[in-house]
Image (cartoon, rainbow, N blue to C red; front, side, top):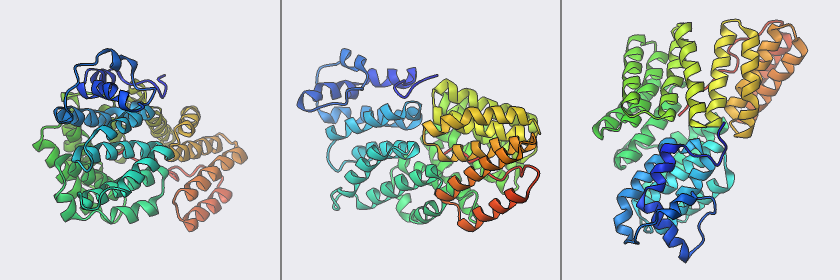
Length: 399
C-alpha cells in the first residue's frame, strides 16, 4: 500500500521531467523549497529561463496535480504551494495553483495548508480579478464542507455560484465549478438544475477534448439521470463516460467512473453489475495509492454486501475501511463504516455492540452537518429496532 509520500509514476514522472519543476529547484537558491519535493527533480535541472516561458508547463503541472494529486495529497499540496511564489502576482496561473492546492487540502481536511491558501486568496489585490478570487474561495470552502460532511454549510456556499460569473471563467475553472455545483445538487430538490450544470460541464470538457474531465462529468451526469428516474439516459451516459476514461486512462479517473457506475447500477437493482463496479473502484483506488478513496470505495462495497444479506463480508469490509477513513480524515467514509459495522453486527445478533456503532455513526454525522432532529429520530429507531435498518447511512458519490 502506498504512503502519503508516494506519488504515482505518471504524476511523478511528469513533474520530474517538467522544466517548471526543475526551475523551482534553481529558484530555491533565492529562498527555501519544501524538503520533500522529489529529489530527482534536482538531478534534471535545465538552464534557467524566464518565468514567462514556464506558463504552459505550470498549467500542465497544475492540471496533473488536480487530476491525480489525491494519490499523494500531502506532497501534491506542497508541490502546488511551492510553485506559487514563483508565479506572477495576480496572475491567472497563480490563482489556478492556489485553487488546486486548496481543493486538495479541503479533500484531506488539511487545516494548515487550507488556511494558507485561504489567507493568500483573502489578501489578493482587490483590483485584480476580484470576481474570480471570490469564486475560488467559495469553491475551496465548499469542497472542504463536502468532505467534512457539513451539508448545511455546503448548501449555503453553492448558492453563491452565480451563473453569469461562472460563465465568464476560463474553461478549466468553468468545468470545475459547474461539475462541483451540479454534483452537490443531485440529492436536493434542484435536480433539474444539477443536470443542466453537469451537461454544461461535459459540453465544455468536450470542446477542449479533455478525456478525463469528460469522463468524470459524464459519470456524474449519469448518476443525476438515474436519480431523476431516467435510466436509459443514465446508462447511455455511463457508457460514454467509460469510453472517455479509457481514451486516456489513469486509476483516479477510472475509479471516479467505477464509483458512479456502482451507484447507478445499485439504483437500478442490477446487483451483479453493482458489485463488479464497486469492486473495480476499490481496485483502482488501491492501484492509485489513494487511501481516502479506498476507504470510500470499501464502504460502497460493504453497502452492496449489506443489501445482499452477506453480513460477514459487509462487516469485514467495513472494518477494513474504518481505520483508513480515520487516518485520512474522510468523515463521510468513517460514518458509513461505523454504520455498516453496526448493521452487520445487529444482523448477526450482536444487538448491543451493533447499536453502539450505529449511534457512533449518527453522532459523527450530526457533528458534521446532519440536523439534530433527523439524527435524534434515527437514534430512537436504533434503540427500538431489532433488525438492521439498511440504508440509514448511505454512501456518497466522489467528486
